[in-house]
Structure formats: C-alpha cells, structure tokens
Length: 132
Image 1 (cartoon, rainbow, N blue to C red):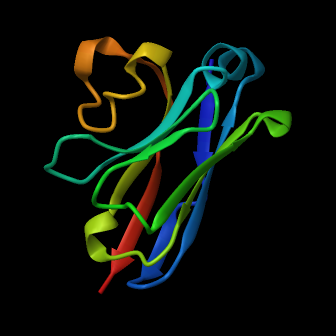
Image 2: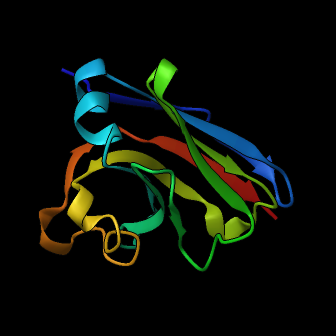
Image 3: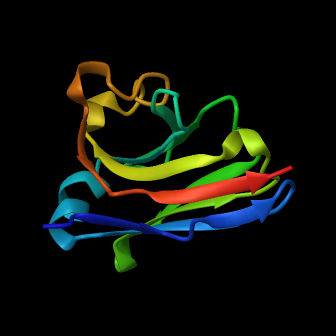
C-alpha cells in the first residue's frame, strides 16, 4: 500500500519555482509526522542526497546547496508535506522523494540519507527537470 505520494514535479527554466507536495497516509503521518519528515533527491548516476527535514516542533534543516532557496513545511490537518523550491538551477534536477524519518535520525539524514536506517518510509518520487 502506498503510504506517501509526491506530486508537483515538472520541467522549469533556471530561476523558476516549483512546489512539491507529499500526501501522507493517516497512519504514516501519525507515526512519522510527529517526529521527522524530509525531502531527498537523486540525480541520474548520483547517490541519493538529503534536501531538507522538518522535526516535530517545526525545526528545519537544509542542505547547504538549497539553503535560502527551498522551504520545507507541513500541514497536519491535511496530512501533507511540502517543498517550495525557488531560484531553481540545473543542479536541482533529479527525482525528489518524501520520506518518514525516525526522530533520532532527523539531525543526520540530510547529510547522510542512509545513515543507521533512520529513513523508514519512502514515496515513489516525482521528477524535477531544470533547464539552463
């Protein structure tokens, strides 16, 4: 059964914006939304990297490469995780995934998404393509 479903990806010119959404199942949101949710991405031929996470109290952590350009947020009433992406550049191209993270790993997974198995649930991904 699908627990997370991303949407909002597409093609955009450099400097443009996209808003990604991740609709989370009620059970998954109740389990992970109270602790840590995040966005990750993977470009062809590259390893998956962390983009941003948001903790249970709303504290956010961003990868240096997106800091100041991307904003992660969540809406508990709608069981939805968002990623607002502004000032996009070609290096942002890739498949974007939302994920549920164990709270203890929230501080680690942006730097290392595979650390200690903290990421428990993945969405199927949405494609983002940024042209120069």
